[in-house]
Length: 169
Image (cartoon, rainbow, N blue to C red):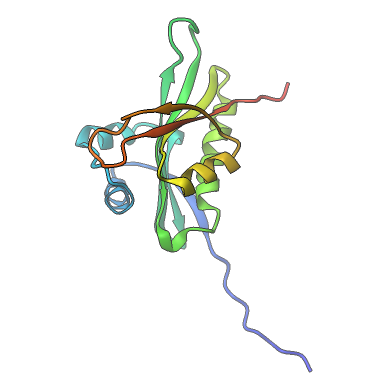
């Protein structure tokens, strides 16, 4: 006897650039996901980041986002840049589906494609052990402890996590 089970329709997951047409979705996600409130100038800038700022959709529902910026490495490294992950979040009901991994992998791929980018880095609240573990699993390393990094939230300390860009020759 065979048991027939109805087949489940395929879930469609895709990334989209953040634009004037969907910026309101990013604002809604940030209000739900983060204890920090971002300024209008932050949202204005994010709309111009192209591949460095993405929304992830599951069956046409916004489920998460990543927002990064390109920064110069500093005067000791002229012409070299790093990517800073400003925000990464996935709604709780969509977690454990590898959406965060998809977003981070997209940024790491962008870093590889840009020959002047040397690393990707971020700050992560020390108390947020789930996020720290997530980044460590993505190949990031804890390189510093930033005391009182966050100014307007109770848990102020952060780890600095870094992943160096490795390019195949």
